[in-house]
Every structure is written in structure tokens, then in C-alpha cells.
Image (cartoon, rainbow, N blue to C red; front, side, top):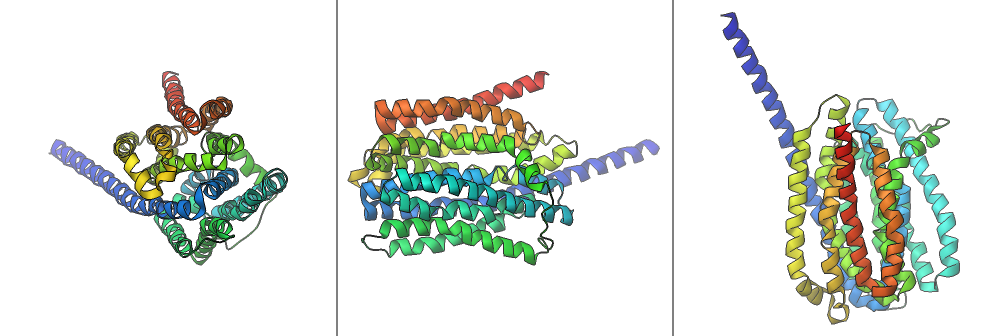
Length: 431
């Protein structure tokens, strides 16, 4: 009788564990599906206005706008300082400690504001002195993008499991902001208005999200303790270096083309790069949903290997399928959407559209394997090494082969990163 009771008890516990596991998987699938819907909208927004702007501005002004966005995009990543990973990791672990979260959030806002001010003091005078008037003014207006990132606390919502809400607010802000782009007519200021409407949504969405956090009971005590900013700078240093290094072989490639080539060449490269970026935008949701859970499980001593394998197969395989479809249909897309004056972007786009496959693998290995195991230093070393070789490669290829050569260099850099990560993981598993 006792054996039967033990068996029934074991069967009950196994069934209960399976039910909990299935519930978690269903939660992950539901959250991922919702975020993918939002991310598709995010991807759809630039695909709506980019052809319109390319036609309205022409190759030269369109290239200036894309170059300005690449410059401020680099500043955006500096201001972010890796909070998408480090910040959400802290929030997910301390989810129930309201006082600790308020202190962390206050210090994070101050840290990001300080980084923005430092970058603005450096970049704005340099651009004003060395860049042409149109590029200088466009860059100054586009500084709204990194300023918005100071208050855009999507990383906090990711940590508390409410990223879908934060993403929906940002998507709605972008959809509303692009409406004036379709009403604009050719005049002397359309370049500047375009820069304003493209970059303002982050600031608006960030303010809305902060107001909602306050309404939900957060940010009641806005106290900055001595040493908090220094602690944040130290804590996020490795992820920050990895993020900035990644920017070198993403935004840095376009900036290199802009310095060496003409604005028209930048517009050719930018079309291919924006198509690549649209596919890369689809990589995030599943990692954003699973990452806080992986961090919590690792902190509790659990492995979560099934979720890692699910993300690896679903994310990398899905992105590969999308890239193959795009590779075959790019000539039609570019011709129909942008017109005959941008046909040179087809070769660039066909090269760059392959890179999301490696970025997806990079994302899974870095975000879902290295980061939960606190292997931040390895992440920094890998991205820093690739960036150190990528920048001179961009300069050389831009001089020799123009946008097509830079695109090949970007593809090679994207391929090397996950290979180095796999090598580092194999080393860690052996030791």
C-alpha cells in the first residue's frame, strides 16, 4: 500500500511539474506572439515612410538624413549603456523589492542623462565645425533620439514582464509621428522636419512610460545616493563596450561611407541597411521574453536549457527563412518601393540581408547563454575584438569598392561574432 501511495504521489508531482512547465511555455509563447505583433508594426513603420522620404528628398538629402540618423544612433547606443540586458536582469531578480527598484531606476535615469550630456557636448560642436550646414542642422535635430532614450525605460518593463505594453506605446508614438511625413511637400525645410518627426517618438513614449510607472507605484522616492552612478557605470561597463563595439560595425559602416563617399552613395547603402535592420528587428521579441526568465532561473539554480534550445531553433531558423525569401525578392522590392534612381541598392541589400542570420545566432548565444551566466566580460572581449578589425576594414573597402565592399565587410563581421561566442562557450563547458 505504501508503495502505491509513493507511486501515486510521484505521479502527482510529475504531473504538477509538467503542468507548471507547460504553463510557463504557454506564457512564453503568448508573450512572444504579442511582442512579434508589435515588432512587425515597428518594422512596418520605416518601410512605410522610407520610400516616401527617398522620393521626396532625393538621393542627396536622403543620404544626409540617413547619415545623421547613423551618427545619433551611435549616441543612442552610448546612452543606452546596456540597460536592455543589465538593467532588465537586475529588475527581474529584484522584482518584489519596490524600494530597490526605485533607487535603481533613479540612478539609471541620472546615469543616462549624464551620458547624453557628455556625448552632446562632444558631438554637437564637432559636427557644427566639420560637417556641412545641412548635415549639422539635421544632426542637432536628430539628437531628440538619444535624448528620448534617456527616459525610454523599456528595459524596466522587460524586467517586470510588461514589455508588450512598453512596445505598444512606442509603436503608437511612431505611427502618429510619421503621419506628417506623408503630408509634407517639397520645400527648403523638408529635410529638417523629417529628422524631427522620425526622432521625436522615443521622447514622447519615454515620458508616457515614466508617467505610467509613477501611476503604478514606482518612482515614489527620487533619491540619488552617493556612488550610485559610479556603480551603474561599473556594472554595465562590459555590456556597454560590447554594445558600442557592435555599433561600430552597424552604424559605423554607414558613417564610414558618408565620410569617404558622397551623400548619394550613403542613400544607396542606407536602403540596404534599413532592409537589414527591419529583419533584425524581428530577432528581439523571443529573447526579450525569455531573457528575464532565464536570468531568474539561473539565479535560482535552474538551467532552462529547453527554452534556450527553443529560442535557438525558432529564432535562427525563422530569421533564415525570412532572409532567403527577401534575397530572392529584393530586386522587385527596391524597384517598386524606391524607383529606378536607387537600383544600385539591390546588390548592397542582397549582401546585408544575409547578416540577420548571424545576428540572430549572436543574440541567442550572447543574450540567452552568456548574459544569464554573467559572462559579460567574454561578451565585451568578443565584440571589442571584432570592432577593432572592422573599422579599418570599412575604410579600406569603402575606398576600394564603395557601398558594396562595406556591405561585405559588415557581413564578415556579423559572421565572426557568433563563431567566437561558440568557441568561448565550448571553452567554458570544458573547464
